[in-house]
Amino acid sequence: MQFDIRSGDIAKAKTPCLILGVFDKGRLSPSAAAVDKASGGALTALLGKGDLGDQAGSTLVAYDLPQIAAERVLLLGLGKRKAFTRGAYIKVLDAALKRLADMRVSDALCAIADLPRDIDPYHGARIALLRAAQAGYRYEHTKKPAREAAPALQRLDLWLAHKKDADAFALAAAHGRAIGAGVTLARELSDLPGNICTPTHLAERALELAERYDTLSTEILEEEDMRRLGMGALLSVSSGSRQPAKLIVMRHRGAGARKDAKPVVLVGKGLTFDAGGISIKPAEAMDEMKYDMAGGASVFGALLAACEMQLPLDVIGVVPASENLPGGAANKPGDIVTSLSGQTIEILNTDAEGRLILCDALTYVERFDPALVVDIATLTGACIVALGRHPSGLFTNDDDLAAEITAAGEDAADRVWRLPLWDDYQKQLDCNFADMANVGGRDGGAITAAAFLSRYTKAYPWAHLDIAGTAWLTGKEKGATGRPVPLLSELLIRRSGAAD
Ligand code: BES
Ligand code: MN
Ligand code: ZN
Image 1: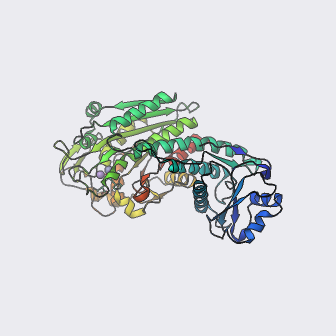
Image 2: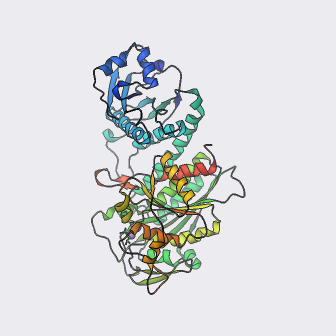
Image 3: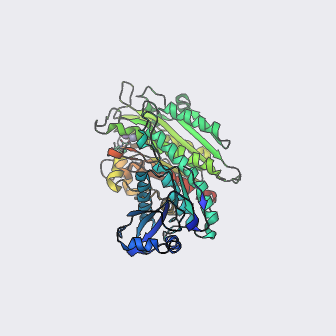
């Protein structure tokens, strides 16, 4: 996808399709008003016929307006001006992109990025470019899309209505491109099937990234290394699989990062297939457990985006990667393992494997003396029950960090919602034979999973994102979303000061 920032006289702007916003009751946005004036009131006359309607997201296309260079104008209903906030903006953007796709327009110029009331021009522009680029994502690795299903839109330019926004728009274009590349990588990795995207495949992809970017280095820990370190929890998950587990460590050291600054560490669950192990899952929708590495994929995506943006920041991405399968060597309910931290765990349900691989990775990253650790995991079905599929679940006992991540999610249009992580939940993990059980019963299942992880993250500021409901879409639209790469990228941008 190509993007450009354009300015000047909007009536003279040559484009196959000019997108103009119209608030309810036919109230023209400033750019629409300029086009209306130049065309001798053509838009007002057209809107007078009432075909656009007052709904946010309604569209109406007009051709050959007098004195207007654009081949066609797509009028886009924005709804009430007062209600034109982030949510409405995203809704109308998607409606416009859908209409462009239906018309198979290849090239458009969009003049609504500075209109939402509660978004600054940088984020408004970035969100538009990212959504346009992602609307063209097609999974192609094992299925060539039919020609008519191939995306038509090749270019979305943004109209710069106010000169003062020029720097913000230019930065948004650069960052939008980088984050888009990160989201695409996360989606591609996640959509790959478990027989192709194995832990070994992920490790190879991480090594490839290190070849592609000067600022990135990759190290792979093998099962022997993990055994030597004492990662008994992680290794018990991979023991039932013929695919060796990998612990993938990627580090972007951006030029200009303060030498003494502590790194930001992202840890992503990389279960390339989760059958549940001996506590096997039901067959229904089990294929979707290829997405159980989506947290790991989001770490790949965020690291790629950081490299592309050349963020002056030290970022470390750690992906414990494994399968979880039943078999003669698999771990069993009642097994007790010793984690890298020394704490013992009674495995009461082998399907609660994410926390087992994460706990050892979370202990491992203590060696980096992190400024912050965020783990990202498709950890619990209970999180989907609690929150549905709109926000990711956020867990942390650090209120400032909760505020920072929540705001980053809002700005990136990739939201989270915080759930409690009170000590009250800890006793659900008590058991008679080890320091803790790996499950805490049905009640508050997303929270007890986070409570388990909290026992391994005392050495640094920490937050946990449960992305079970947000990492992929089910049903007819089945496919990875690339979330929360936009949120993680925003967090890294903020930590680096790159958009200040
Ligand atoms: N990967 C799953 C969680 C999951 C399930 C994510 C469905 C998205 C959709 C995880 O490893 C798991 O199996 N969790 C169990 C935990 C339970 C055994 C305490 C779950 O959620 O059922
Ligand atoms: Mn599981
Ligand atoms: Zn899992």
